Image 1 (tube, protein in one colour):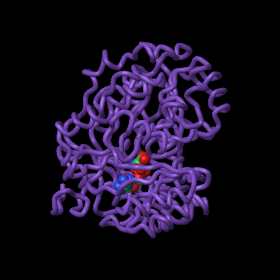
Image 2 (image 1 turned 45 degrees about the vertical axis):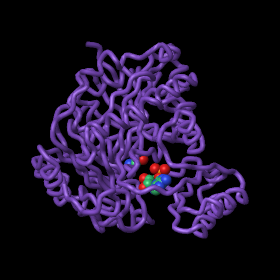
Image 3 (image 1 turned 180 degrees about the horizontal axis):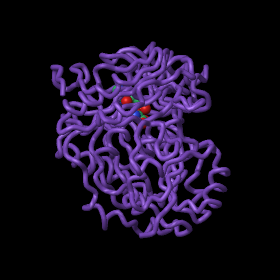
Image 4 (image 1 turned 90 degrees about the vertical axis):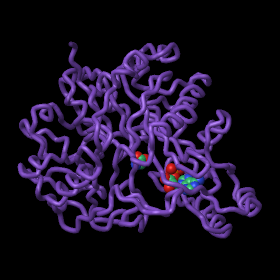
Length: 463
Ligand code: AMP
Ligand code: GLY
């Protein structure tokens, strides 16, 4: 078997989870994370994550920013990188995949044109309408007066969204037409989200629980991952401001196999087919954010990458070799037209296996997050005792200073654990996070609780 050096671009918990899973592949000789975090630093055979199994010694960092396409390309060429995996949406929207592909390098992720599904909400909505993919009723505007007139005439609650990438912000849920006009003003006139808000999408406001369904795609064939659900608000009971995600679990007990089939048939496959028909084969991960409305599943958004923290619960459930799957999705280097002819995922789709049971992850955040927060707080408890707990820690905002793991971001780390059922997975993940400590650390205590007000039915369940 040929061995590869794999490069992972990004620095969050998602990238640590990708590195952890890729390193378990016998095909991966080395795994280099650019720029990585304190958990992906190699320290003499063990990583700072507290995990010291042999495979983690393959992981190390290189100090190149995710946005530095030229630097990443140079590094990949000079170091015979056999596969590059792009974590965040920014470099994808900037066209890093096009640059690597043109240079004959294997890279996992969609092209710049395909990444428009995430980078422009107006593009995604137009595409969904043309493909008859279920989504909220909408209109898109680039002038304030027309947008305000539409809101007044619409008469029902709306959601105002900045068209471009706004780092998870840029979506304003509005109660009244006055709220909506204020939201339009913030986006379009005050430019609170910068250039991302020059165009807005206004949508009917829907109700229902949400689910993230991610699929691997080679441009033709998709293989879905177990459905996941993240918790976006900072405090228990879904209170407080939105964050990048405070925890997640998979699979989602209120999403049946039949519902996944429906989502695949009505949302994911028509998206891949529609992109191919437009001459823009979609390779990489297609992530559909879906609301389970009383009228059926409706697409809220597409992301063109793995989710964070969804990846930290999905990858521990993957039994198969991740490198095999990613290589099957990627057109071989120069032959970018190959993806128009068909990738290799259909040949191995029946071999993609998942563990039974469940996985949960709990995010530990810095004091003040998602507002301003201090950095450089020493993190305690990443020790042998933690390791024996059976939980896994994926670092996000951490770095190493003088041999000590310290905080360097808002979402600091997440603790994932598997179990035969969700209850066990949650119990283990909470036992793991309770072992870790830094000053002012906070985390949600209700990951895995399904809330009644989000639900089409009216009662609260705990799983
Ligand atoms: P998005 O980035 O488009 O997924 O939106 C972020 C969040 O805003 C979603 O996860 C939903 O909670 C909420 N949201 C977005 N669109 C709608 C909608 N049309 N109706 C109700 N909630 C929405
Ligand atoms: N968990 C939400 C996202 O990755 O966009």
